[in-house]
View 1: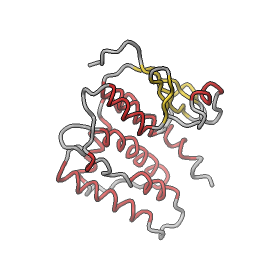
View 2: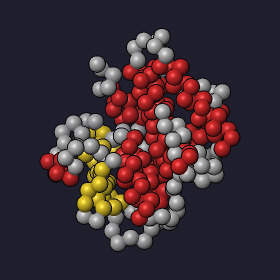
View 3: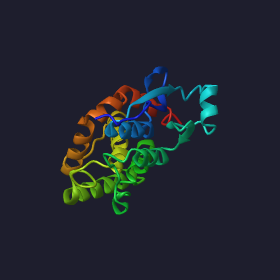
View 4: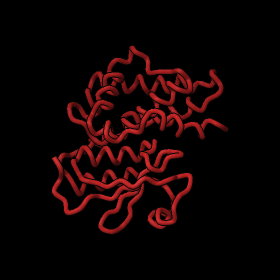
Length: 218
C-alpha cells in the first residue's frame, strides 16, 4: 500500500554501462529502491551515467557517487544514511533491524569481491567467502527465514543485492555457485530474489556481468 505523500521521492541511481536509459548494476542503489518499494513510497528514478557524469549530478553530489535522494529540497547521499532517513520519515511498515542483528552477513560482500578479483587459487579468498556464507547459513537455520525472523528488515534489503551480484558474477566469471548444502542460505536467496520489490528493482544479469568487467580487467 502506498504511503500518503504529496510528491514522489527523487532518486539518483546508476545507469547501465553503455546504456544510460537502463537501470544499472549498483547494489547500493538497489538497496535504496528496495527500501522505497517495501515501504510503498512513490519515487522517480533518474539514471546517472557514471562513466560520463553530467554537471547537474555533480552539483547534486560533488562526491559523484550514487545513490542520492532529495529530501526537503536537499540532496542526501550514502545508502546507509538514506535508508535510515526513509525509515525515520516513513516508519510504517518498520524495516528496523535490531542492533545486535544489524551486522549479520556484513563481511560477505568484501569477501565476494576479493574472491572474484583473485587470480591465485591458493590465496584463501574462496575459503574466506565460504566461511562467511556458512556463518550466514547457520544463523538463518536458527533465526530465519529472514535475518530478523519472519519479517524482512533493513539488513535483508542490504544483503539481497550483494548476494545477487555474488550469484551472477561468480557464476559467470568463475563458474562458481553457493554450495547446495547451504540449504538455508539458498532458500533465503531464492525468497529475496522472488519478492516483487526485488524483481522491480534488479538489474538484468547481463548488466551485472558487464558492470563487473572493468573491475576484472586490471
